[in-house]
Length: 90
Image (tube, rainbow, N blue to C red):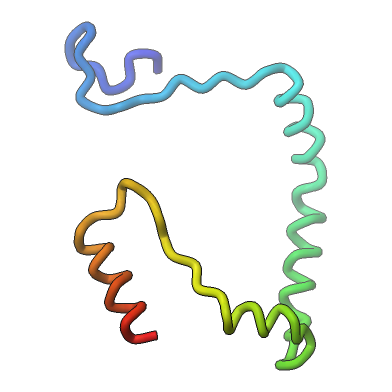
């Protein structure tokens, strides 16, 4: 695994990452994993409640007034054009 993406020594065709987990991170994730199924069931139950218009007036107002734009250096020219067209249509 340490030579993933390597065809010849010191030459990498693919960018790879070498992430390490600390002991404390492992312990925390292990504890969380025990609760994952219950958390998933609760999240699905909340999703099934089907809120109706007006249940969250402040949230609905903010959603109508705020526009979040994607901002990152990796946006391609086509993606930027798509964002511009979506703003114009808004």
